[in-house]
Image (tube, rainbow, N blue to C red):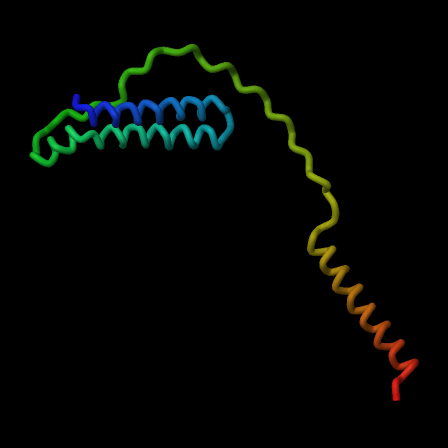
Length: 121
């Protein structure tokens, strides 16, 4: 392996470490991110300069897969998620806007009506 190949391999290994950390979060985003990072690590390994050079010369270089991972202890079971409560739960924003609009119309009518009581000649 060349020095550039080692740098690419180190980058792929770091992506795999990040993927394991994301998977250990245990939520949907972490699992999705873990899958994406694993795919990126595999793709990055295909970008090794020696493999690119071999493909350019049309040689059939064996593209190694991810290196074997040491067996780690199984992850603990996921804890149940607490139920989310609604924040505030107040009235609908559309209802509030409608009420403000109606109050504005009523206020405009009252001001206009009072203007007729004391006209400026």
